[in-house]
Length: 48
Image (cartoon, rainbow, N blue to C red; front, side):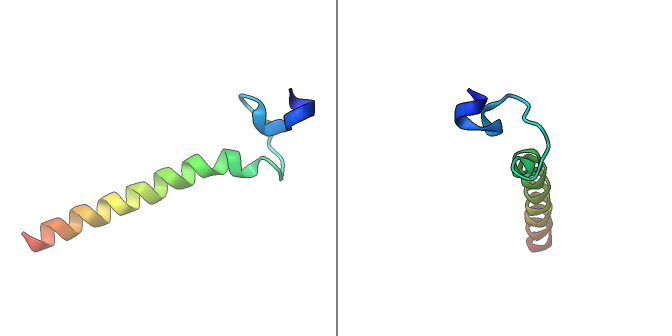
């Protein structure tokens, strides 16, 4: 399947330039989500 679809199809693809987004995207999403959550909580506390 790797020959047909590429490294992205594997459960744990090798780390290279083509699959870097697959490894980094979940961590970026967690950090951005955490920042948005903190900002939303602070905004609610300042209004109350």
